[in-house]
Image (cartoon, rainbow, N blue to C red):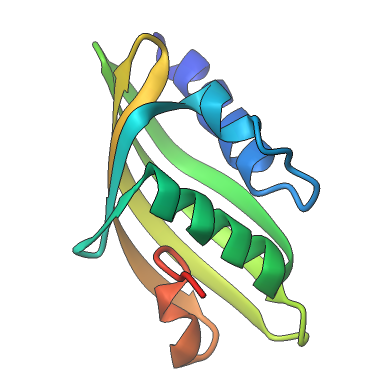
Length: 132
């Protein structure tokens, strides 16, 4: 996968899984059944990741992503992206994420990420791991 292909894949994936009307099959298009996510030291298996995405759809009015760096090498992708979001209560946040993705058969099987709250309230620092 080239860098341009990796950028397109990540943009498509983030927009699809975070869409307010995302269907239950969207996760399977991008993630393996044994997917594991590690964000800021918190691990989520696929079921927990799906619960995390449901929480985001419940809490956020909208979210957008700006990819500033994307690198592809073999079965690994790395990126830096900024998530800008508005909570349903009107609060806004901006969070920087740095991630490394491992692919298997064209799907993400592992994702490691660290985050930095750039704008917003302290309670929004957990955006990458939040589950209700």
